[in-house]
Image (cartoon, rainbow, N blue to C red; front, side):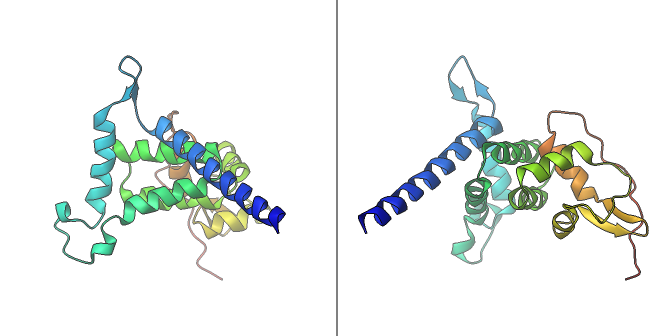
Length: 193
């Protein structure tokens, strides 16, 4: 019995430690830090609050609905960080946050792309960042089902093709510091089933 309690406490401690490591990584990678003053630049913190408030139901946005919805997006962001599980995935979420703060994406796109990060393994995300292109993909690859479920691949007459969402994920999260172009046109979807 004592051993079981110790195991439970250790598991809870590991979960908390992992969350705080991911939270620290997220914060350090999301915001500009002023080395001279040893502080985060205040406009960064304020811009995230404004971005969440613009899309979140609240009084500043003239929201008059249910009070339990007031902090929905802030809670969803904390849940995303908690679900990251790894520092690398927290970096990807931080990159999406930077894209949101610079108005390259909106809040809806932020949460859509975050869901992809949360649901894929680091290996799947790395594979996507290194192998995405406009060529068709064979349906025999291991990752096809997972990518399709998240809207990153769609069926064409010649196999599968990466979607606009996949290119957005690469540009705004997986390779944020690089200049990544999103194609203007994509292969035609297969309409025959």
